[in-house]
Image (cartoon, rainbow, N blue to C red):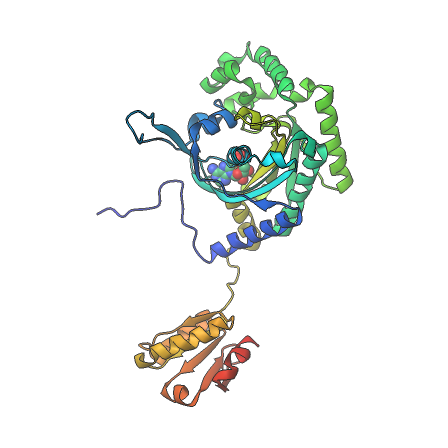
Length: 428
Ligand code: AMP
């Protein structure tokens, strides 16, 4: 029978690598708390309409990459509901913001999430069909200051701090503004006119986008189309005065905070909801998949999915790519931490007593592995040496006298320790 394997584009994360995942997540939670973000957990699947309306029908994500299915109708009179595994988390957070009327408090909401996302992409290193994102959103009614360029700068400054704290060295921040909805409509007209004479030389996707949503032509990855894309007008020339001064204020605040960035006038990001500030953090060590995180402002998203006006800004970072970056930086063979002790029962009749001793030590806060009485002493020593700093030997005599034999592998010394003092001695 053919063996079953993890599905293409998905993978198992195993120890000791998962320790690195946990370290990154812990750094994120720590930094988010310092900036007054609270955690939100939204469902892994949502109504397909949320992504169609939020992310945009013409985006690669919605048009090609979603895992979507029809949920069986419960009654004959009901239509089946179209459901989708979330390809990103911002739409879900905004849906929750609307559903729970979080805007009614008048307060700015600062929410973060950590979780898996799903896209039917062509898998390669750094690109998976199930991948993890750490992201955050700052959203609220206009009166809460959610539209202020200070929020954009604060989020970007937090990201710089977060990457530093995770130990990611050598990132670059690329920044652009895609303007307001009106600026984008104007830019789309400009693009449509610029594309008209050349679009027949482009790929079929671009030919379609040139009509439906010309901005998305800038997402095109087809190498032959790139020289044409390079000649297209940039969005900066379509921004109105409000958008220009918003962007200028973001840049001024970043300059004041000492956060370095590079302007990239073609950075439009592959999701339709972005307005004004867009950004990406890149890392040279990742090869083709060099984006470690991306985000931007989405002042119209809440309204696009049926909610009140709620400007916001957010980002999502690829946890898989952070792990790859850190592994490349630190080398694969980061030493794993040894346990405090290994309890070795001498004979199977001592297994139950060994479990009880291990329980005492573990409850005292020590990390302990439990051996098996069927092991010969030599095998116990080998297993203990691999996993723990010290071995505690439990034979009939030790059990009766309450005096245990402890060997320290680092020094090679063997000592007799009364059971009552064991936990303290092992801690030292
Ligand atoms: P996006 O939601 O497309 O703006 O992506 C935000 C970040 O998520 C990217 O910068 C990547 O680090 C990560 N990411 C997006 N798609 C994938 C994928 N298929 N596999 C791994 N990471 C991804």
